Image 1 (cartoon, helix red, strand yellow):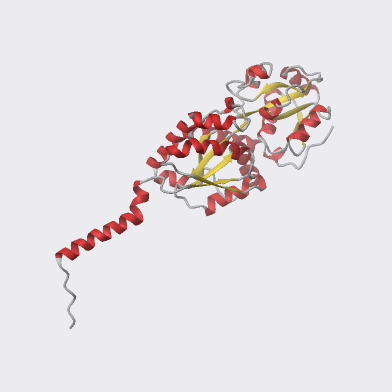
Image 2: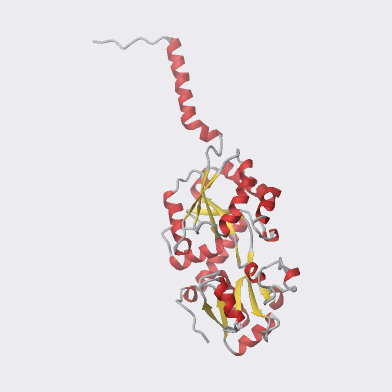
Length: 341
């Protein structure tokens, strides 16, 4: 019978040390250091859009706070964001090095109306809101409506036609919520984009328009903003003739209805790595307040006053309110088109 080879104590101890070193190199680095490689980011819209314009100056401030880690972006436009979300949830590793950067409002409405094959918040959460762009109601300067009260009074007598870029948007929900809360009536007409919507309002094809406010303000000499859907304040009161919040005029509590891009990450990773997630939360807040981010964002031509930060709790509140309202108005939001005139 062959005897097993003899192993000296020195060789045995040395072998253990080598095994430990190999184990450390294979698994210990990721356990001890986070992040350990570059971040991969899924943006569920096209390259060169508003999401990229805010994400890149932000990562210039965020990366140095996370071991000087770099960010790599992939863009997946289509199906109102569904393509990018499904790819992120189903194909990207849940390792804390893969992020989602999306538009909470529009893409949560998509989640309700298109019913994709993933679950929020089981599969992913938002944890860092970057900015707000409030929904507003506006008219051309020649309109007989001078206040939001004028609009509601008229809409109690007849149905007003409202130009929107698309039906399934937060601005559509804003108009529908106002109607329900005040007993006024509105007919949403989609024009397929911001510019066609503005033209319809300017030409008098519709009674009023409803859009995110920052775009409307680029034509403020032609438009008058009558009401803003923000629970707290009109961030641009000084350049919109002190347009009031809708809630303040009518004593309502309609939830915030703004466009808001935010960072998301897999829920499973968050639950398994609370310390690493806490690092993301802390550094994201610090980066958002950083002059590096704010100056970089302003260089894109944007006004930095809309950079309102929201943490995980704020993101979740906004998300759940958006989902609830989208479900409430799902029948209208999934309609193919409104009727003109």
